[in-house]
Amino acid sequence: MNDIASVENKVSASISYEYKGMKDTVNLVDSVIYAGSLKIENADDSGNSLQGAQFSIYNEEAVFENGSNYGILKWKKMPGSYKAGDVIKVGKGSYKIVQENAPLGYEKAYDKIVDVSISHNGSEVTVAAKDGRGNSLPVHNGTISANIVNSPGGSASANGRK
Image 1 (cartoon, one colour):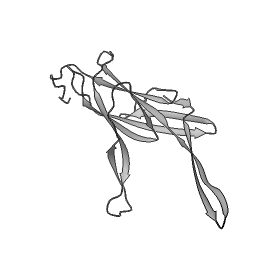
Image 2 (tube, rainbow, N blue to C red):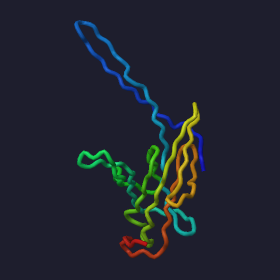
Image 3 (cartoon, rainbow, N blue to C red):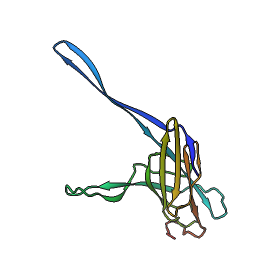
Image 4 (tube, helix red, strand yellow):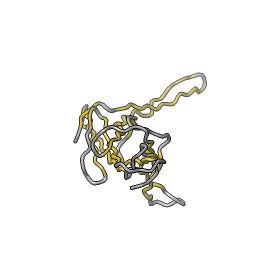
Protein backbone atom coordinates (compact mmCIF):
# COMPACT_ATOMS: atom_id res chain seq x y z
CA MET A 1 0.00 0.00 0.00
CA ASN A 2 1.45 3.34 -1.03
CA ASP A 3 1.00 6.58 0.86
CA ILE A 4 1.60 10.13 -0.27
CA ALA A 5 3.02 12.29 2.48
CA SER A 6 5.28 15.23 3.14
CA VAL A 7 8.39 13.45 4.41
CA GLU A 8 11.25 15.62 3.24
CA ASN A 9 14.11 17.00 5.29
CA LYS A 10 16.30 19.80 3.93
CA VAL A 11 20.03 19.69 4.49
CA SER A 12 22.37 22.59 3.74
CA ALA A 13 26.13 22.90 3.73
CA SER A 14 28.11 26.11 3.58
CA ILE A 15 31.56 27.39 4.37
CA SER A 16 32.47 30.74 5.89
CA TYR A 17 35.89 32.28 5.45
CA GLU A 18 37.87 35.43 6.11
CA TYR A 19 40.75 36.54 3.87
CA LYS A 20 42.59 39.86 4.11
CA GLY A 21 39.75 41.47 5.99
CA MET A 22 37.04 40.19 3.63
CA LYS A 23 34.43 37.82 5.01
CA ASP A 24 32.11 35.66 2.98
CA THR A 25 29.93 32.59 3.23
CA VAL A 26 29.59 30.26 0.28
CA ASN A 27 26.59 27.98 0.00
CA LEU A 28 27.94 24.61 -1.10
CA VAL A 29 24.78 22.60 -1.51
CA ASP A 30 21.14 22.34 -0.57
CA SER A 31 19.78 18.82 -0.63
CA VAL A 32 16.50 17.24 0.23
CA ILE A 33 16.49 13.91 2.01
CA TYR A 34 13.26 11.94 1.86
CA ALA A 35 12.38 9.75 4.82
CA GLY A 36 9.51 7.84 6.33
CA SER A 37 8.80 6.24 9.70
CA LEU A 38 8.53 2.64 10.83
CA LYS A 39 6.13 1.83 13.67
CA ILE A 40 6.56 -1.47 15.51
CA GLU A 41 3.34 -3.18 16.51
CA ASN A 42 3.12 -6.43 18.52
CA ALA A 43 0.10 -8.73 18.70
CA ASP A 44 -0.88 -12.32 19.39
CA ASP A 45 -2.35 -14.74 16.81
CA SER A 46 -5.83 -13.27 17.43
CA GLY A 47 -4.73 -9.67 16.83
CA ASN A 48 -4.74 -8.59 20.49
CA SER A 49 -2.02 -6.07 21.34
CA LEU A 50 0.91 -7.34 23.40
CA GLN A 51 3.30 -5.40 25.61
CA GLY A 52 6.66 -6.27 27.14
CA ALA A 53 8.66 -7.30 24.07
CA GLN A 54 11.98 -5.66 23.20
CA PHE A 55 13.14 -5.22 19.60
CA SER A 56 16.34 -4.35 17.76
CA ILE A 57 16.37 -2.78 14.30
CA TYR A 58 19.02 -3.60 11.71
CA ASN A 59 19.54 -1.89 8.37
CA GLU A 60 21.25 -3.40 5.37
CA GLU A 61 24.45 -1.63 4.34
CA ALA A 62 27.21 -2.29 1.84
CA VAL A 63 30.48 -3.02 3.63
CA PHE A 64 33.73 -2.56 1.69
CA GLU A 65 36.48 -4.65 3.27
CA ASN A 66 40.25 -4.38 2.77
CA GLY A 67 40.01 -1.57 0.22
CA SER A 68 37.81 -3.63 -2.08
CA ASN A 69 35.76 -1.92 -4.79
CA TYR A 70 33.01 -4.48 -4.22
CA GLY A 71 30.72 -4.17 -1.24
CA ILE A 72 29.06 -6.98 0.66
CA LEU A 73 25.56 -6.37 2.01
CA LYS A 74 25.46 -6.89 5.77
CA TRP A 75 22.92 -6.19 8.51
CA LYS A 76 24.09 -3.42 10.84
CA LYS A 77 22.36 -2.90 14.18
CA MET A 78 20.89 0.57 14.65
CA PRO A 79 21.49 2.18 18.05
CA GLY A 80 18.86 1.69 20.75
CA SER A 81 16.31 -0.81 21.92
CA TYR A 82 12.67 -0.52 20.92
CA LYS A 83 9.26 -1.63 22.18
CA ALA A 84 5.80 -1.94 20.61
CA GLY A 85 4.48 1.49 19.69
CA ASP A 86 7.89 3.03 19.05
CA VAL A 87 8.35 4.95 15.79
CA ILE A 88 11.76 4.95 14.06
CA LYS A 89 12.82 7.27 11.21
CA VAL A 90 13.87 5.32 8.12
CA GLY A 91 15.03 6.06 4.60
CA LYS A 92 14.88 3.99 1.45
CA GLY A 93 16.35 0.54 2.05
CA SER A 94 15.94 -2.78 3.84
CA TYR A 95 15.41 -3.11 7.58
CA LYS A 96 15.14 -6.14 9.85
CA ILE A 97 13.12 -6.12 13.07
CA VAL A 98 14.43 -8.68 15.57
CA GLN A 99 12.42 -9.50 18.67
CA GLU A 100 15.04 -9.80 21.43
CA ASN A 101 12.57 -10.71 24.20
CA ALA A 102 9.00 -11.95 23.69
CA PRO A 103 6.13 -11.03 26.03
CA LEU A 104 5.80 -13.42 28.98
CA GLY A 105 3.99 -16.61 27.92
CA TYR A 106 4.74 -16.18 24.19
CA GLU A 107 7.37 -17.56 21.84
CA LYS A 108 9.75 -15.19 20.10
CA ALA A 109 8.56 -14.18 16.64
CA TYR A 110 10.52 -14.69 13.46
CA ASP A 111 12.59 -11.71 12.31
CA LYS A 112 10.62 -9.38 10.04
CA ILE A 113 12.20 -7.86 6.95
CA VAL A 114 10.80 -4.49 5.81
CA ASP A 115 11.78 -3.10 2.39
CA VAL A 116 11.08 0.64 2.19
CA SER A 117 10.77 2.54 -1.07
CA ILE A 118 10.46 6.31 -1.22
CA SER A 119 9.90 8.22 -4.43
CA HIS A 120 9.09 11.82 -5.21
CA ASN A 121 7.51 13.62 -8.11
CA GLY A 122 7.59 17.35 -7.68
CA SER A 123 5.96 18.12 -4.33
CA GLU A 124 4.49 14.62 -3.84
CA VAL A 125 6.43 12.02 -1.91
CA THR A 126 5.30 8.39 -1.93
CA VAL A 127 6.27 5.94 0.80
CA ALA A 128 5.67 2.21 0.26
CA ALA A 129 6.85 -0.90 2.07
CA LYS A 130 6.80 -4.66 1.64
CA ASP A 131 7.70 -7.46 3.99
CA GLY A 132 10.29 -10.14 3.18
CA ARG A 133 7.63 -12.18 1.34
CA GLY A 134 6.62 -9.30 -0.95
CA ASN A 135 3.35 -8.45 0.86
CA SER A 136 2.53 -4.75 1.04
CA LEU A 137 2.59 -3.22 4.51
CA PRO A 138 0.12 -0.50 5.56
CA VAL A 139 1.40 3.08 5.34
CA HIS A 140 -0.41 6.12 6.75
CA ASN A 141 0.96 9.68 6.56
CA GLY A 142 4.44 8.35 5.79
CA THR A 143 4.44 5.86 8.70
CA ILE A 144 4.81 2.15 7.91
CA SER A 145 3.12 -0.30 10.31
CA ALA A 146 5.14 -3.46 10.94
CA ASN A 147 3.16 -5.95 13.03
CA ILE A 148 5.14 -8.63 14.86
CA VAL A 149 2.93 -11.62 15.76
CA ASN A 150 3.69 -13.91 18.72
CA SER A 151 2.23 -17.37 19.34
CA PRO A 152 1.42 -18.52 22.88
CA GLY A 153 3.65 -21.08 24.53
CA GLY A 154 6.91 -19.40 25.45
CA SER A 155 8.76 -20.41 28.59
CA ALA A 156 8.75 -18.28 31.72
CA SER A 157 11.90 -16.57 30.46
CA ALA A 158 10.20 -15.95 27.07
CA ASN A 159 13.43 -16.66 25.22
CA GLY A 160 12.38 -19.60 23.04
CA ARG A 161 12.63 -19.12 19.28
CA LYS A 162 10.01 -20.46 16.87
